[in-house]
Image (cartoon, rainbow, N blue to C red; front, side, top):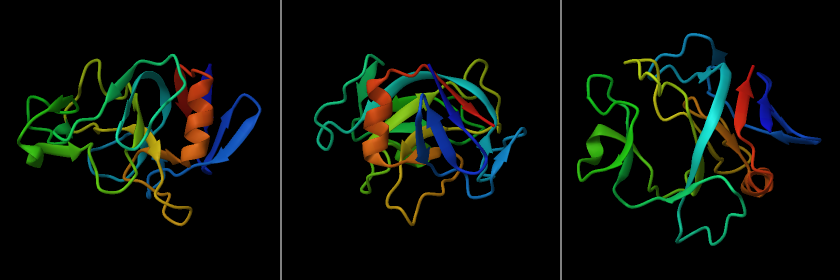
Length: 163
């Protein structure tokens, strides 16, 4: 089952419609690291990562990974671990997944720029939560409200199309 996201910030899944946030500079066919744009395309859902201390139960068949305090996604194009999620003590080389805010309490990892990884093509592109209804724009991800995320995940989507 596929999640559809249009350039106007509407997410559709089955017969449900949700408002969503996109990159503050819109969407693009030519994503670059740091451009604040959401990439267009169809992407597989790899897994879900979540904060076990904040989210008690996610009902889904999608594989789940608990976010640890030292998880990052490397966002430095020159680093050999660019666009990879891993644990490290050097949090300066990437986007920290354990955050003080709630944005990454639940995040859906998309297969954007993974096979193969192209340097400077964009990293850490997720479907994640938005902080509040006034702050939904992102640096390039898609963001939705927590209750909508939980409703989506119950239905086990396997792809997302951004157009």
